[in-house]
Amino acid sequence: MADRPEYLICLDCETPCYSFEWQEGEVTEVFCDACGADTPEEFMSEDDFEGMVSAEGGEAGGH
Ligand SMILES: [Zn+2]
Image (tube, rainbow, N blue to C red):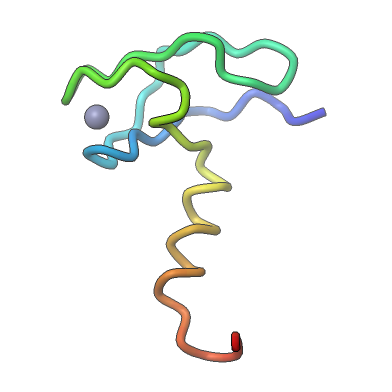
C-alpha cells in the first residue's frame, strides 16, 4: 500500500538516496553513493527515519 518514497535515507551515513528500486511497498535494490551501502536493511524511508529520530530524541511521555 505504501507509495514509493521520494528518497531513502542511508542509516550508515544518513544520506538521502534518490536512486533505488521500489516494488510492492518494499525496497528491492538501493545503493548509497556516499558510503557504498547496498542492502535494503540499511536504508529507511523518510517517514520511518523521522519516526525513529523523534522516538530517540523524545523525552516527553514514553515509559
Ligand atoms: Zn551511506
